[in-house]
Length: 88
Image (cartoon, rainbow, N blue to C red):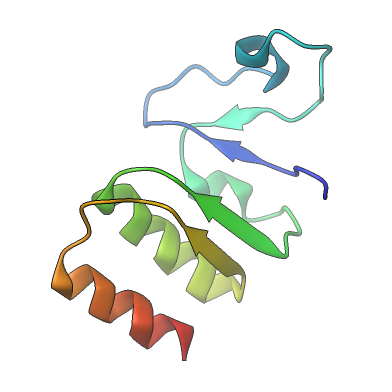
């Protein structure tokens, strides 16, 4: 398992992912928008955010053919339907 990217809320100052974790620098910069990771090669996106952010990430994952693990709670029936549709 190798972490290749990280995303925070819009407007978040882009910093090395190690800073919030208080560990040695990783070289992985936390971005404030998933679209800024379009050049990153990934096998899966792990998402524990808000329903609105999950749906934006789902669009990105579908467009880039990246699998998702979604741990977000509070998704509506419409959200769940879209997730199911995207997984097919």
